[in-house]
Image (cartoon, rainbow, N blue to C red; front, side, top):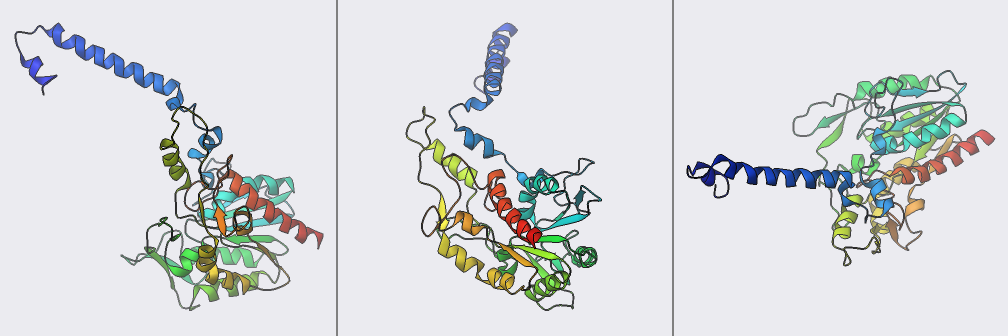
Length: 337
């Protein structure tokens, strides 16, 4: 009002009197904007390892031959079709985060690699996932989807089938609270409801996998440690608050979470996974990579060179590679038999 509108209405001023300041201001804005863009936000002082992980979303990387994302694809994706050996990956977004790197490693071993990953969805035949407030059945994660998978998997013989996901959420119906200020959204606003065949998720999961394992090798991925914090955002805030604003040095206390909280949180999940037994069952423990290892009694989320997480729960490209290394070790055991 004071700097534009009021002077513009003053008839004693010539038009050029108004136009010139506006053009100058506009030119300054354009110059500053172009300068910021050309310098990529003046991020030269940011550590390279931090920049490389800021916008990392590994669960969206894997695509089929038509360029469609494999994550959330109800039809799943298949690679190296026709190979004599097969590896399946079944799970939620945590499994979607590891599948891009895993696919490349599996294809090198000349397996067909088939993935079916839906958000907040593992493998619970006889159940629908519903939105608690409305009672509506999810269009992708439902008994129809599980039965379709079950039909495919029960026909398989001598295949390797990997199951994993965020079991602690589905079994407790609560998001993660790390008890140190890192709290997600409280109660999960969705839940799994039975269709009649099974009374509990545990019964559905255990019985279904035991049946599949009669003719196939099963690899179970135990719970990946949750963090409660969006790790890149938390590190970014720490970076902005650092004492020396002109230095690229980024030495801070590492962001860690309690190993005891992890054990308490995953107790029921471990019990379920441990109850799936048999000579064809193999197990991968991601927490051994991150917890009670580098820091006693704590679970790490990054080091001075790399982020292991891209948010509160999904592993980064490096974190995924670390987990995939464990998976490949189990596949070698299967091959040696």
